[in-house]
Length: 385
Image 1 (tube, helix red, strand yellow):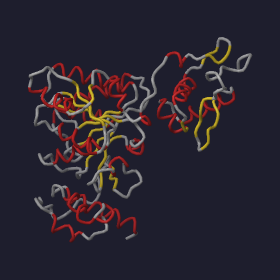
Image 2: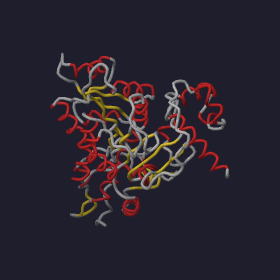
Image 3: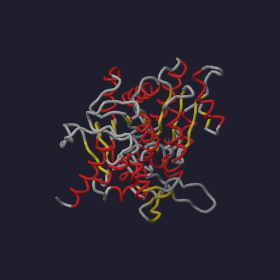
Image 4: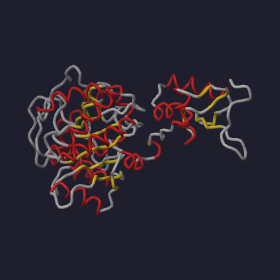
Protein backbone atom coordinates (compact mmCIF):
# COMPACT_ATOMS: atom_id res chain seq x y z
CA UNK A 1 0.00 0.00 0.00
CA UNK A 2 1.31 3.47 -0.87
CA UNK A 3 1.90 6.08 1.86
CA UNK A 4 -1.19 7.96 0.63
CA UNK A 5 -3.20 4.75 0.79
CA UNK A 6 -2.04 4.10 4.35
CA UNK A 7 -2.99 7.63 5.36
CA UNK A 8 -6.44 7.22 3.87
CA UNK A 9 -6.92 3.85 5.55
CA UNK A 10 -5.91 5.30 8.93
CA UNK A 11 -8.48 8.08 8.54
CA UNK A 12 -11.26 5.71 7.56
CA UNK A 13 -10.53 3.31 10.40
CA UNK A 14 -10.55 6.13 12.95
CA UNK A 15 -13.75 7.57 11.47
CA UNK A 16 -15.39 4.14 11.72
CA UNK A 17 -14.35 3.67 15.37
CA UNK A 18 -15.36 7.22 16.29
CA UNK A 19 -18.85 6.70 14.84
CA UNK A 20 -19.50 4.19 17.64
CA UNK A 21 -17.54 5.81 20.48
CA UNK A 22 -18.63 9.35 21.44
CA UNK A 23 -15.68 11.69 21.98
CA UNK A 24 -13.06 9.14 20.91
CA UNK A 25 -11.11 11.54 18.69
CA UNK A 26 -11.08 14.23 21.39
CA UNK A 27 -9.74 11.78 23.98
CA UNK A 28 -7.06 10.57 21.59
CA UNK A 29 -5.99 14.11 20.69
CA UNK A 30 -5.83 15.03 24.37
CA UNK A 31 -3.64 12.01 25.09
CA UNK A 32 -1.32 12.21 22.06
CA UNK A 33 -1.18 15.94 21.41
CA UNK A 34 -2.46 16.41 17.86
CA UNK A 35 -4.66 14.95 15.15
CA UNK A 36 -1.56 14.20 13.08
CA UNK A 37 -0.13 12.12 15.93
CA UNK A 38 -3.43 10.29 16.42
CA UNK A 39 -3.58 9.28 12.75
CA UNK A 40 -0.13 7.72 13.07
CA UNK A 41 -1.32 5.32 15.79
CA UNK A 42 -2.23 1.70 15.18
CA UNK A 43 -5.93 0.90 15.79
CA UNK A 44 -4.93 -1.16 18.83
CA UNK A 45 -3.98 2.11 20.54
CA UNK A 46 -7.61 3.32 20.28
CA UNK A 47 -8.98 0.57 22.47
CA UNK A 48 -8.09 1.85 25.98
CA UNK A 49 -9.94 5.10 25.22
CA UNK A 50 -13.11 3.81 23.59
CA UNK A 51 -15.15 4.80 26.67
CA UNK A 52 -18.85 4.40 25.95
CA UNK A 53 -18.07 2.44 22.80
CA UNK A 54 -20.89 1.10 20.65
CA UNK A 55 -19.00 -1.89 19.28
CA UNK A 56 -18.83 -1.54 15.49
CA UNK A 57 -19.94 -4.33 13.21
CA UNK A 58 -17.12 -6.76 12.37
CA UNK A 59 -16.87 -5.64 8.75
CA UNK A 60 -16.38 -2.01 7.80
CA UNK A 61 -17.90 -0.89 4.48
CA UNK A 62 -15.13 -0.60 1.91
CA UNK A 63 -16.51 1.36 -1.03
CA UNK A 64 -18.76 4.40 -0.93
CA UNK A 65 -21.95 4.07 -2.99
CA UNK A 66 -22.50 6.17 -6.09
CA UNK A 67 -23.07 9.81 -5.28
CA UNK A 68 -21.12 9.79 -1.99
CA UNK A 69 -17.64 11.32 -1.81
CA UNK A 70 -15.25 10.45 1.01
CA UNK A 71 -12.81 13.21 1.98
CA UNK A 72 -10.21 12.34 4.60
CA UNK A 73 -8.25 14.60 6.93
CA UNK A 74 -5.20 14.27 4.64
CA UNK A 75 -7.15 15.28 1.52
CA UNK A 76 -6.46 18.76 0.09
CA UNK A 77 -10.21 19.30 -0.26
CA UNK A 78 -10.82 18.72 3.45
CA UNK A 79 -12.21 22.08 4.68
CA UNK A 80 -9.68 24.12 6.65
CA UNK A 81 -12.61 25.40 8.69
CA UNK A 82 -12.93 21.93 10.24
CA UNK A 83 -9.24 21.72 11.10
CA UNK A 84 -9.68 24.47 13.68
CA UNK A 85 -11.72 22.06 15.81
CA UNK A 86 -9.98 20.41 18.75
CA UNK A 87 -11.45 17.08 17.56
CA UNK A 88 -11.91 17.34 13.78
CA UNK A 89 -13.50 14.42 11.92
CA UNK A 90 -11.00 11.95 10.51
CA UNK A 91 -13.13 11.87 7.37
CA UNK A 92 -16.27 13.50 6.05
CA UNK A 93 -18.85 12.00 3.70
CA UNK A 94 -20.41 14.30 1.13
CA UNK A 95 -23.40 14.27 -1.22
CA UNK A 96 -24.40 17.00 -3.64
CA UNK A 97 -22.26 19.41 -5.62
CA UNK A 98 -18.83 18.15 -4.68
CA UNK A 99 -17.10 20.92 -6.64
CA UNK A 100 -18.31 23.38 -3.98
CA UNK A 101 -16.34 21.63 -1.25
CA UNK A 102 -13.07 23.32 -2.21
CA UNK A 103 -14.79 26.73 -2.08
CA UNK A 104 -16.19 26.43 1.46
CA UNK A 105 -13.14 28.07 3.03
CA UNK A 106 -13.55 31.17 0.84
CA UNK A 107 -17.32 31.65 0.83
CA UNK A 108 -19.25 33.60 3.47
CA UNK A 109 -21.27 31.03 5.45
CA UNK A 110 -23.76 31.58 8.27
CA UNK A 111 -25.33 28.90 10.45
CA UNK A 112 -29.05 29.34 11.16
CA UNK A 113 -30.33 27.17 14.01
CA UNK A 114 -33.16 27.18 16.50
CA UNK A 115 -36.33 25.60 17.79
CA UNK A 116 -37.74 22.39 16.34
CA UNK A 117 -41.24 23.62 17.09
CA UNK A 118 -40.98 27.33 16.19
CA UNK A 119 -43.72 29.93 16.19
CA UNK A 120 -45.10 31.53 13.06
CA UNK A 121 -43.02 34.61 13.88
CA UNK A 122 -39.85 32.52 14.11
CA UNK A 123 -40.54 30.87 10.76
CA UNK A 124 -41.27 34.24 9.13
CA UNK A 125 -38.10 35.87 10.49
CA UNK A 126 -36.03 32.89 9.38
CA UNK A 127 -37.46 33.03 5.87
CA UNK A 128 -36.95 36.79 5.48
CA UNK A 129 -33.42 36.93 6.94
CA UNK A 130 -32.19 33.84 5.07
CA UNK A 131 -33.62 35.04 1.75
CA UNK A 132 -31.82 38.37 2.12
CA UNK A 133 -28.58 36.65 3.12
CA UNK A 134 -28.68 34.31 0.12
CA UNK A 135 -29.44 37.18 -2.27
CA UNK A 136 -26.35 38.91 -0.85
CA UNK A 137 -24.25 35.80 -1.62
CA UNK A 138 -24.12 34.24 1.86
CA UNK A 139 -24.40 30.44 2.12
CA UNK A 140 -26.62 28.92 4.80
CA UNK A 141 -25.43 26.10 7.08
CA UNK A 142 -27.87 24.13 9.21
CA UNK A 143 -28.74 20.65 10.43
CA UNK A 144 -31.75 19.82 8.23
CA UNK A 145 -33.77 19.10 11.38
CA UNK A 146 -37.42 19.97 11.93
CA UNK A 147 -38.32 23.60 12.58
CA UNK A 148 -35.87 26.47 12.10
CA UNK A 149 -33.22 24.28 10.42
CA UNK A 150 -35.62 23.12 7.73
CA UNK A 151 -37.13 26.60 7.34
CA UNK A 152 -33.67 28.07 6.78
CA UNK A 153 -32.83 25.56 4.08
CA UNK A 154 -36.21 25.91 2.39
CA UNK A 155 -35.74 29.66 2.19
CA UNK A 156 -32.19 29.20 0.91
CA UNK A 157 -33.00 26.81 -1.94
CA UNK A 158 -36.12 28.79 -2.87
CA UNK A 159 -34.16 32.04 -3.08
CA UNK A 160 -31.39 30.41 -5.14
CA UNK A 161 -34.00 29.08 -7.55
CA UNK A 162 -35.54 32.54 -7.94
CA UNK A 163 -32.17 34.28 -8.43
CA UNK A 164 -30.15 36.27 -9.16
CA UNK A 165 -27.84 36.14 -6.14
CA UNK A 166 -24.55 38.00 -5.72
CA UNK A 167 -22.52 34.85 -5.10
CA UNK A 168 -22.75 31.06 -5.04
CA UNK A 169 -24.49 31.01 -1.59
CA UNK A 170 -24.62 27.20 -1.33
CA UNK A 171 -26.86 25.60 1.30
CA UNK A 172 -24.86 23.20 3.48
CA UNK A 173 -26.68 20.58 5.57
CA UNK A 174 -24.70 18.84 8.32
CA UNK A 175 -26.29 15.59 9.49
CA UNK A 176 -26.30 13.60 12.72
CA UNK A 177 -26.56 10.41 10.64
CA UNK A 178 -25.05 9.10 7.43
CA UNK A 179 -25.57 10.97 4.17
CA UNK A 180 -27.49 7.98 2.85
CA UNK A 181 -30.15 8.41 5.54
CA UNK A 182 -32.92 11.02 5.46
CA UNK A 183 -33.81 12.08 9.00
CA UNK A 184 -36.53 13.06 9.61
CA UNK A 185 -38.29 11.38 6.71
CA UNK A 186 -40.59 14.40 6.31
CA UNK A 187 -37.58 16.33 4.98
CA UNK A 188 -36.97 13.89 2.10
CA UNK A 189 -37.90 16.38 -0.65
CA UNK A 190 -35.90 19.17 1.03
CA UNK A 191 -32.92 16.80 1.39
CA UNK A 192 -32.84 16.32 -2.39
CA UNK A 193 -33.23 20.05 -3.09
CA UNK A 194 -30.32 20.91 -0.78
CA UNK A 195 -28.16 18.20 -2.41
CA UNK A 196 -28.98 19.60 -5.87
CA UNK A 197 -28.11 23.19 -4.87
CA UNK A 198 -25.33 22.64 -2.33
CA UNK A 199 -23.85 20.00 -0.04
CA UNK A 200 -24.96 17.34 2.44
CA UNK A 201 -22.12 16.61 4.88
CA UNK A 202 -21.62 14.13 7.73
CA UNK A 203 -18.77 12.63 9.70
CA UNK A 204 -20.74 9.37 9.92
CA UNK A 205 -20.68 6.50 7.42
CA UNK A 206 -23.40 6.74 4.79
CA UNK A 207 -25.93 4.25 6.25
CA UNK A 208 -25.46 4.92 9.97
CA UNK A 209 -28.79 5.91 11.56
CA UNK A 210 -29.51 9.01 13.60
CA UNK A 211 -28.88 8.58 17.33
CA UNK A 212 -29.36 11.16 20.07
CA UNK A 213 -25.67 11.37 21.03
CA UNK A 214 -24.65 12.12 17.45
CA UNK A 215 -26.51 15.44 17.27
CA UNK A 216 -24.40 17.43 19.78
CA UNK A 217 -21.31 16.18 17.93
CA UNK A 218 -22.94 17.29 14.65
CA UNK A 219 -23.46 20.79 16.09
CA UNK A 220 -19.72 21.40 16.45
CA UNK A 221 -19.35 20.88 12.69
CA UNK A 222 -22.15 23.36 11.98
CA UNK A 223 -20.34 25.98 14.06
CA UNK A 224 -16.91 25.20 12.57
CA UNK A 225 -18.13 25.53 8.98
CA UNK A 226 -19.69 28.93 9.65
CA UNK A 227 -18.44 32.49 10.01
CA UNK A 228 -21.30 33.34 12.38
CA UNK A 229 -24.20 31.54 14.07
CA UNK A 230 -27.74 32.95 14.11
CA UNK A 231 -30.19 31.57 16.68
CA UNK A 232 -33.92 31.94 16.02
CA UNK A 233 -36.05 30.87 19.00
CA UNK A 234 -35.27 28.02 21.34
CA UNK A 235 -35.96 26.70 24.82
CA UNK A 236 -33.29 26.76 27.50
CA UNK A 237 -32.35 23.14 26.67
CA UNK A 238 -32.37 23.59 22.88
CA UNK A 239 -29.59 21.91 20.90
CA UNK A 240 -28.98 25.30 19.29
CA UNK A 241 -27.34 26.26 22.59
CA UNK A 242 -24.58 23.73 21.87
CA UNK A 243 -24.01 25.21 18.43
CA UNK A 244 -23.74 28.71 19.90
CA UNK A 245 -21.28 27.49 22.55
CA UNK A 246 -19.07 25.84 19.94
CA UNK A 247 -19.13 29.06 17.91
CA UNK A 248 -17.94 31.08 20.92
CA UNK A 249 -15.09 28.61 21.50
CA UNK A 250 -14.05 29.00 17.86
CA UNK A 251 -14.15 32.79 18.01
CA UNK A 252 -17.19 33.15 15.76
CA UNK A 253 -19.90 35.73 16.37
CA UNK A 254 -23.26 34.58 17.70
CA UNK A 255 -26.42 36.55 16.92
CA UNK A 256 -29.97 36.05 18.13
CA UNK A 257 -33.41 37.17 16.99
CA UNK A 258 -35.36 38.52 19.98
CA UNK A 259 -38.61 36.69 20.70
CA UNK A 260 -41.77 37.51 22.61
CA UNK A 261 -40.78 38.03 26.26
CA UNK A 262 -41.95 35.37 28.68
CA UNK A 263 -42.49 32.68 26.05
CA UNK A 264 -40.51 29.41 26.40
CA UNK A 265 -39.06 29.92 22.90
CA UNK A 266 -37.61 33.27 24.01
CA UNK A 267 -35.44 31.64 26.68
CA UNK A 268 -32.39 30.79 24.59
CA UNK A 269 -32.15 33.87 22.32
CA UNK A 270 -32.70 36.22 25.26
CA UNK A 271 -30.10 34.41 27.34
CA UNK A 272 -27.62 34.71 24.47
CA UNK A 273 -28.40 38.42 24.09
CA UNK A 274 -27.78 38.97 27.81
CA UNK A 275 -24.45 37.16 27.46
CA UNK A 276 -23.32 39.45 24.65
CA UNK A 277 -24.68 37.92 21.44
CA UNK A 278 -25.40 40.34 18.61
CA UNK A 279 -28.95 41.51 18.05
CA UNK A 280 -30.39 40.40 14.72
CA UNK A 281 -33.32 42.34 13.30
CA UNK A 282 -32.37 41.89 9.65
CA UNK A 283 -29.81 40.28 7.35
CA UNK A 284 -27.76 43.50 7.52
CA UNK A 285 -26.98 42.75 11.18
CA UNK A 286 -25.63 39.33 10.22
CA UNK A 287 -23.58 40.60 7.30
CA UNK A 288 -22.01 43.28 9.51
CA UNK A 289 -20.82 40.52 11.87
CA UNK A 290 -19.03 38.54 9.14
CA UNK A 291 -15.24 38.72 8.86
CA UNK A 292 -14.31 41.49 6.46
CA UNK A 293 -12.57 39.08 4.11
CA UNK A 294 -15.85 37.21 3.56
CA UNK A 295 -18.32 40.07 3.82
CA UNK A 296 -20.27 40.59 0.58
CA UNK A 297 -19.70 44.04 -0.92
CA UNK A 298 -22.46 46.58 -0.37
CA UNK A 299 -24.89 46.76 -3.26
CA UNK A 300 -24.98 50.24 -4.70
CA UNK A 301 -26.87 51.18 -7.81
CA UNK A 302 -24.57 54.15 -8.18
CA UNK A 303 -21.54 51.89 -8.58
CA UNK A 304 -23.38 49.72 -11.09
CA UNK A 305 -24.09 52.84 -13.14
CA UNK A 306 -20.68 54.55 -12.85
CA UNK A 307 -19.86 56.55 -15.97
CA UNK A 308 -16.94 55.54 -18.17
CA UNK A 309 -17.37 58.23 -20.80
CA UNK A 310 -20.09 60.02 -22.71
CA UNK A 311 -23.38 58.18 -22.18
CA UNK A 312 -21.67 54.81 -21.63
CA UNK A 313 -21.85 53.28 -18.17
CA UNK A 314 -20.13 50.47 -16.35
CA UNK A 315 -22.53 47.56 -16.31
CA UNK A 316 -22.39 43.85 -15.59
CA UNK A 317 -19.08 42.34 -14.42
CA UNK A 318 -17.11 45.59 -14.88
CA UNK A 319 -19.48 47.43 -12.53
CA UNK A 320 -19.46 44.60 -10.00
CA UNK A 321 -15.66 44.33 -10.03
CA UNK A 322 -15.29 48.10 -9.62
CA UNK A 323 -17.74 48.05 -6.73
CA UNK A 324 -15.60 45.49 -4.89
CA UNK A 325 -12.34 47.33 -5.58
CA UNK A 326 -13.77 50.58 -4.23
CA UNK A 327 -13.86 48.83 -0.86
CA UNK A 328 -10.52 47.00 -0.87
CA UNK A 329 -7.69 45.68 -3.04
CA UNK A 330 -8.42 42.13 -4.25
CA UNK A 331 -7.08 39.22 -6.29
CA UNK A 332 -8.97 37.80 -9.27
CA UNK A 333 -10.25 34.91 -7.12
CA UNK A 334 -11.42 37.31 -4.42
CA UNK A 335 -13.12 39.50 -7.00
CA UNK A 336 -14.95 36.46 -8.41
CA UNK A 337 -16.07 35.43 -4.93
CA UNK A 338 -17.23 38.88 -3.81
CA UNK A 339 -18.78 40.02 -7.07
CA UNK A 340 -20.55 36.79 -7.90
CA UNK A 341 -18.97 36.76 -11.38
CA UNK A 342 -17.03 33.95 -12.99
CA UNK A 343 -13.23 34.09 -13.00
CA UNK A 344 -13.15 34.54 -16.78
CA UNK A 345 -15.63 37.44 -16.56
CA UNK A 346 -13.52 39.06 -13.84
CA UNK A 347 -10.32 38.80 -15.89
CA UNK A 348 -11.99 40.46 -18.88
CA UNK A 349 -13.45 43.18 -16.65
CA UNK A 350 -10.09 43.87 -14.95
CA UNK A 351 -8.35 44.12 -18.32
CA UNK A 352 -10.93 46.63 -19.53
CA UNK A 353 -10.66 48.69 -16.36
CA UNK A 354 -6.84 48.66 -16.58
CA UNK A 355 -6.94 49.87 -20.18
CA UNK A 356 -9.24 52.72 -19.18
CA UNK A 357 -6.95 53.76 -16.34
CA UNK A 358 -9.45 52.95 -13.58
CA UNK A 359 -7.63 49.97 -12.06
CA UNK A 360 -3.96 49.04 -11.64
CA UNK A 361 -1.90 46.10 -10.36
CA UNK A 362 -1.04 46.39 -6.66
CA UNK A 363 1.47 43.52 -6.44
CA UNK A 364 1.08 39.93 -5.18
CA UNK A 365 -1.64 39.34 -7.74
CA UNK A 366 -3.91 42.04 -6.33
CA UNK A 367 -5.64 44.95 -8.08
CA UNK A 368 -6.70 48.35 -6.79
CA UNK A 369 -8.55 51.44 -7.90
CA UNK A 370 -6.27 54.13 -9.36
CA UNK A 371 -6.37 57.13 -7.07
CA UNK A 372 -4.97 60.52 -7.99
CA UNK A 373 -3.63 62.89 -5.35
CA UNK A 374 -6.35 65.05 -3.90
CA UNK A 375 -9.21 63.40 -5.76
CA UNK A 376 -11.53 60.43 -5.99
CA UNK A 377 -10.98 57.49 -8.35
CA UNK A 378 -10.77 58.94 -11.85
CA UNK A 379 -13.32 58.84 -14.60
CA UNK A 380 -12.36 57.83 -18.13
CA UNK A 381 -9.84 59.62 -20.29
CA UNK A 382 -11.34 62.53 -22.23
CA UNK A 383 -13.36 61.33 -25.17
CA UNK A 384 -14.65 58.17 -23.53
CA UNK A 385 -13.44 54.69 -24.40
